Length: 154
Length: 359
Image 1 (tube, helix red, strand yellow):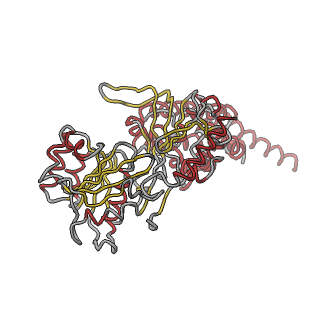
Image 2 (cartoon, rainbow over the protein chains, first blue to last red):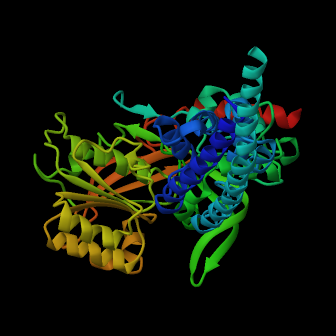
Image 3 (tube, rainbow over the protein chains, first blue to last red):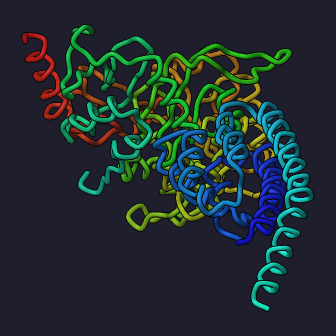
């Protein structure tokens, strides 16, 4: 994947995560389904997108009851880090995503998810800016290098 | 009582237990484990196992002792971990159950919880800082009501209104559950066709529904109103399900008694339980007088324990004895409820305890 495409993919991945949080909000705060079922659902269909392996892994760890959502999420995110088109700073912020999930009542879970939505919106904005500035730079750089190569060949 | 089938297994709860507690429980011999009724886990306290009529502390090696100092002491973190495991790490999914003080687990066991109660106005909103958990191991004892059932049937298609009474922990719910199963399934032996039955399971103990699925066998013609208060449940069942029989556990208020009258007026039979020592004690309880006498319950099943042995008797509304096993005619070990192998395994547990104490 090219550098410019990767910046675009980063933006799309964060947007997807925002959609996923909306889905989780419904499942958790309205339907009251347990986290392992929510994660399982996200791992099953196409809804999870690039995040599917993370939810699949953390969902199965939760189902085994060996750990809480925060730990399961951290492990799964770490394992999938290579395949996710995210920057280091995104990973640092997302590492704590599962920390407060499942540890309070529906009202508080709503507040937790709202907070996560805001964090991801800010990350998405940063990614968008990066895609606009750096993406343009990478594209122009690519075009210049291509032109230089053609001149050299002539 | 060869037909009795025990459906219980500690493996149903092992998955929920934190490692140290799980290891200790796994070391308990299967015979002793099958007699365990409750596991009491207190933060900072010794792990406690409750049997019929007595309790013992459990050591890290899975032995029983009467000395708390020798027992496995549970930490605060372990209780917290256990609580999260019981809630599948999703407190919000169990917040209504937490507010009621207990959780029904997969497999039908029940976990009572204690901690700091949080109020919202006048209603309990939840609990935090959970300090103790009591896991009650439910015992489904299929066939335990077969001997008494012929005395509560009133022909092939009908039963008598029946009240099961006993002090706590004598097997009322186990008996009720099996009666429900027989009524719903029917019995060739008792020449009884199955009837439409509704269980009003206020405390999720009869059917023990876990995410809508009954964990205990209540028969093929049974519908369950889970977590529903009895007066509302009776009204809902009469309106929507047209049951021939309504089953409910632990009557306690005048309102319950009045609702039963309403069900009788609609022609529905009732099988219920209540805490009382005998029929006279039951009649004296507040509000229950309207359920006794000529227009009240027609059969009483009284359960009790004497010298560690369970007994049962069936009487009619006038106190005439129809069936009974008592000290002269003891019930076999393993028949009534959770106390099979009493002389064997529990005896062994006690001797284990004695050994541990001496050590």
